[in-house]
Image 1 (spheres, rainbow, N blue to C red):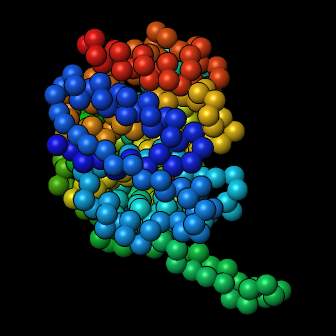
Image 2 (image 1 turned 60 degrees about the vertical axis):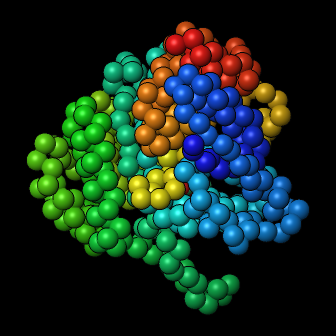
Image 3 (image 1 turned 30 degrees about the horizontal axis):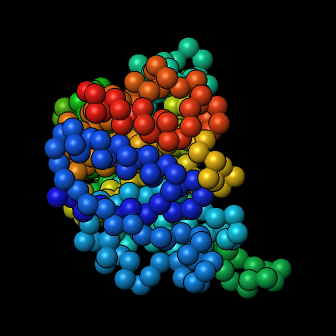
Length: 352
Ligand code: IPM
Ligand code: MN
């Protein structure tokens, strides 16, 4: 019996989560596992009503679950940063979800802006470090508001934090068993402390994985290759900030935010799965947003829970819907409503 915490969140989050849960129900029946869900109302509306972003007990409470399923965080009436830091980053950090796993996968039938590239070319995974780097919050102001003001924002890279991330990436690459190639993405030519540590750690850990080919690319060049030669990549490992940036680019090459999913993973603890786009508030309640990113996040959750057969089935269901049904992945242009897309995925699963 899996215990799953559900945080639908803001904007269109609840709409897409509803479709994900529809698919979870269908696949649990099909494959035969049991689960229960507990919903949490954390998000912008709760914050505006109570002034509290997360209850104090939140992190401890989340530790009781096998996984967390998150819709989206972000509210037009809340100043940027409050909910992101107070909910999303607080959960990632509090639960030590040190991996942000973001597949860049072009499903069949999905249009990519990359000329002459197809599903066989765009299929790699970014392993983003998720608790350190520029996201650590280290730094501050001096003489704030004066002409002499100084602002610093430090990138914290610990040997332990880098090593566990790099090690996860090697393991993941081995398990994925495709090109068996792991690319470290950094900036060793300028960030000569941080990425020196990354590079040394990467090379040391690589010795334990003789079956994995290793490669290195600077982050600026990586954005070039992601557009020009995405087929070069199998698994990428990188720091938090670079991972944040390149996965938005990756998401666009796989058809946009309507399909891009990610997992915030603590391999020894509780992981959290989310569509990587925002809450898209302008589409709230219109039943037009694409739920496939949320369904993809659910698919990743099943994989991490060890429900491989279920994960594989949902993956095929998504491919079926993109390959044979949807006109576009964009909100309002799919040719179907949010709930109809969820129905089609669930139906494919049920009929499989
Ligand atoms: C993401 C988002 C977050 C991040 C924001 C909302 C804090 O951009 O999940 O990629 O920067 O990690
Ligand atoms: Mn981002």
